[in-house]
View 1 (cartoon, rainbow, N blue to C red):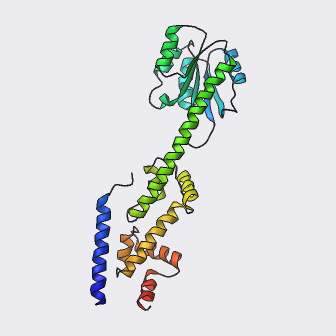
View 2 (cartoon, rainbow, N blue to C red):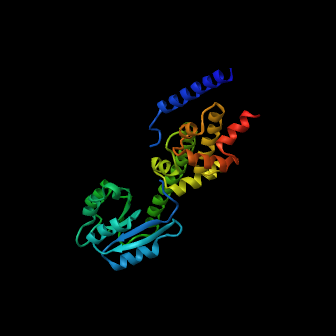
View 3 (cartoon, rainbow, N blue to C red):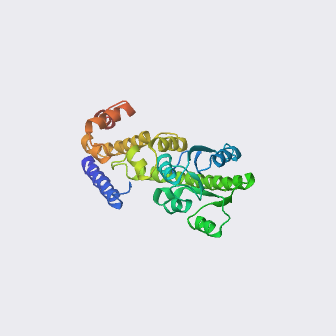
Length: 275
C-alpha cells in the first residue's frame, strides 16, 4: 500500500516538474551606480574653458570636469575615451565645428547632454543645436545664472532617471525571486540572472539581500533544498532529486544538503522511514 501511494506521489511530482519546465524554458533572459556626472569642455579659447570651470556649481549638481578639448577632433576623441555625461560645446572650433560634432553624436554618444556655447547670436546655429538635441544654447560671455540653470536641468533629469532606475530594480528583484521560486530546477545563478536583467552581479546581490535578507546564491539553495526534501520524501533517490532540483552533480548536491541540514540525503531518508 505504501509503495502504491509513493508511486502515485512520484508520478504527480514528476508531472508537476514537466509542466513547470514547459511553461517557460527560456524565462532567464541602469543601471547606473550613484556617481559624479562627467563633464567635458570643448572650446578653443583657454579663457572660456577657465571661466566655465569657475562659474559652474559642480559640487552642488554632483558633476566633475574630466577633460578639456581645444579643437573638434580632440573633442571627438575625448568623447570616446572619457565617455562624458555632459558636453559643453563651442560652435566654432578648429578641425570640426560644433555642428559637425553634434551630427556625430549617434549611438552610445547620443546619450550625452549637450550645452552649446557660442559667440554668435545666429538663429541657424541655434536651430541646428536644438535639432541635434542640445539642452541649451548659451551666448558668450557666459551668464553664470543661465549656465547653472542649464546644469540644474540636466541634474534634475538625471535624478528622475535614477529614481526610475531604482523602481525598475525593485520590480526586477520581485521578478527574479519569482523565477527562482518557479524555475529552481533550471540552470540559474547570480551571474546569469545579472546578465538577464542587465545588472552588475555585485549590485544585484547587494540589492537582493537588502530586500529579502539573504543573498541570491543562498536563496537559490534554500529553495532547491526545500524542494529536495519533498522529493526525497516522495521516494526519489538522491541522484534523481539532484537533477530535479537543479544540481547536475549528485555528489555536490549531497555536500550542499549535508551542509544545510547536518545530514546527507540518504540519512534524511533513513530517519524519515524510521520515524
